[in-house]
Length: 317
Ligand SMILES: Nc1ncnc2c1ncn2[C@@H]1O[C@H](COP(=O)(O)OP(=O)(O)O)[C@@H](O)[C@H]1O
Ligand SMILES: [Mg+2]
Image 1 (cartoon, rainbow, N blue to C red):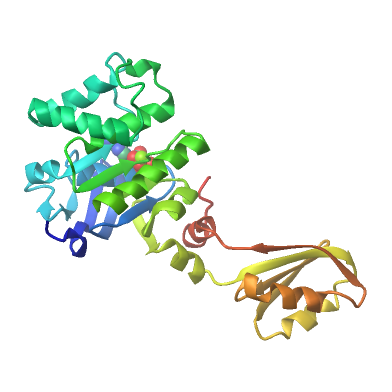
Image 2 (tube, rainbow, N blue to C red):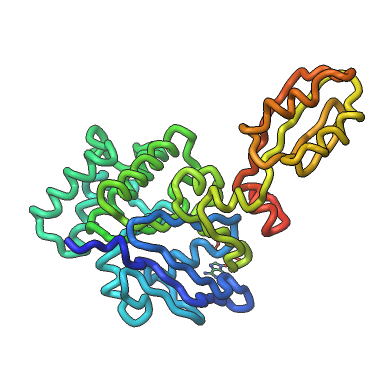
């Protein structure tokens, strides 16, 4: 087997999509190395589904270009389709088929011989743990089971690149965690390249090697989750208690690793280079002199703060 992990598996250059006067995508550049998980994180209307649609050859770009597994999505759509799996944001499962029929029909569409279809179905049903339900009608499935069936269908053709458009939208935390496990396993055990979209920052944080923050059709930031968060700087140590904290302000500000001290009603918030390393020293400096520490917590910036920083809006607006 060739080592695909050193190659770029998804790339776009200046990808642009106009719907009439609406600019759904406005010059997006992406590079996703093989064997990695890339998450496009953004609010509704950011352009996530449009990106997936173009990369899976369902929509044509207005300008710019894109390649998947080395093939151009506009000029070589058949080569692209042979190498990808997709799950859509809106479930497109026929409720009056059994799970097995859904998978079988998909294999037939790709002209897989019967023996191969059977083998794949057995393997994928075990993978997504639908053994007990696979011969029941889809309309009897829970939301989590439908998502798992969709994932299995996306894998029927043994793809190199898998696109997941909001794979856990509407799922409860337990079902979400199950899907996350499958996604990680696909990367780890099969070396798949995955591009997923999400408006859940915890999902991007939990899964992605690289996160691209997208807003209004533009990529506004990109990096590993930890690098994006680290670029925001400081952890904050929040100390609350009783007594007079005002004289602590200058004392704490004088410490070399403190970059801000903000008072609030019952205490102080102290910006430091590392919350876990500095907590003891900050608490020691804050105690005494008429102030009694009652509660301490370390606040880490999250991808939500990163989103706010780059867009001026909260992700969940
Ligand atoms: N088929 C379409 N016709 C007209 N406008 C569209 C169409 N598809 C998407 N849009 C618009 O393009 C923008 C991006 O949509 P979309 O890619 O679905 O965003 P997301 O998936 O991030 O929520 C939105 O403003 C949306 O209304
Ligand atoms: Mg969408």
